[in-house]
Image 1: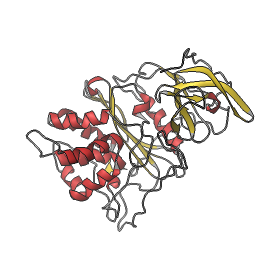
Image 2: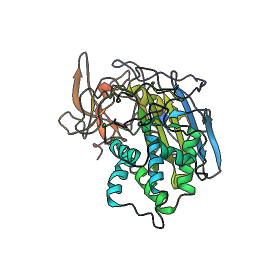
Image 3: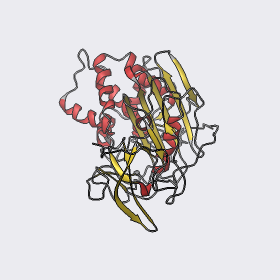
Image 4: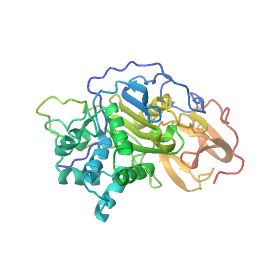
Length: 399
């Protein structure tokens, strides 16, 4: 049985839902841009989009205080966030120099950077599966209170490990403040090198923290469920629908929701890893990846994150599937990747380029997306006009 699993689900958390603008527009030229990004916003309550269940914890290491806590003890299925515990378990007693053998480095680096599932399967099966979680929860140095192994009937599925937002913060605090320096450096250096595309299913994993703040940041993301999405990278294309392997019926009631689509963003933000952010979310059945991506981004941008710097630009919704991001403002330019359907994007500037026609619309304007390092035709952005409002012109094409 393959031990592939990702995701997050709330145990019995009931989140107070705040009013928030709905997801990206579903049809051309209807809707408008979100507000421009700027300096770090003042403290305010986390804004949970309608239909989203969330557990949130934001911890400022400089002051030693939480700036945000929303149902932070609620248990979610961990998805790939559990990979932090897999690598900690492997490295725990490898002193005195904590050297990572070459064969393990070849597995652990892509597991941390690109969320490689084959590597997680290897460590889960080799080192005892649920016993790994038992060892981690028994370690006083970690101080885990809500973490638990996968429920009965799901022992082979590492992504069904139960985890809370506050325990996620505790894991990062251990790595940064208590772990031996070689362990800390190995884990954090790899998380700082997070790739946009995951290695197993070519999932665009730069949502949440990675999209809400300028570097420096370090992230370990998680996702679980079947999302209709475009794949990530130059070879993107196809339906991209990901269905997880079938799991047996549990012999006892599961302590976490194992069904609804989930998306987590966790990691650190700011110089010296000042602030730890853990946002664990569950979405309604049938939610597209683009909508979940957008909702998690909006939630993350609403948080008070000391030391975080917001990227300059304006957020716009998109429409259409498999929208190409290209190196220049023309369809002949090389494709960098494709956008998940309906996702919000940050636009830095705009430039005239090749006219694109999607009847009954035509548009010669192209938008530069700094977080992708490329351009999309503005015909695919949700705006009332061809020329985007309040967005400067780029001048020469961006490098």
